[in-house]
Amino acid sequence: MDIAYVQNQEFRLRFLRADLHDAKRAARRFALHFQAKLDLFGREKLTQDIAQDDLDEKTLYALYHGFSQFLPVRDQAGRLVHVQFVQPKEVEFVDKVRMDFYMAMIKSEDDDT
Image 1 (tube, rainbow, N blue to C red):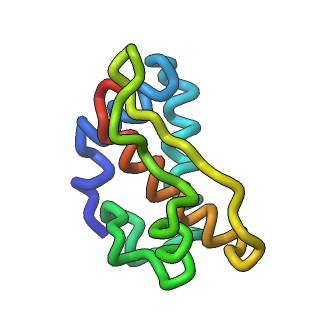
Image 2 (image 1 turned 120 degrees about the horizontal axis):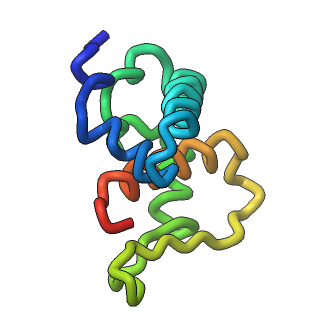
């Protein structure tokens, strides 16, 4: 595994920003992130960014059919706007969670969000 991925300062700052620089809460979020990533994508993706190529066919179906998307404009504060719609029954829960994880990683890369 690539230890540099975990030690990357910009990556770690995402968790601090998400918890308004509360180090204890950010550390907990950091640990939960990796547990969820392990459960959803396996050990081989643990220290890699998740790309669309890592999503399976069912998850891509949910993603490409517009059930979760970023609007092409930002809100008045300059943040990304993420909307989700009710998904049909054929989209399984685990596929929705994988899609949400992927979308959350995209959001976390944006410093203004």
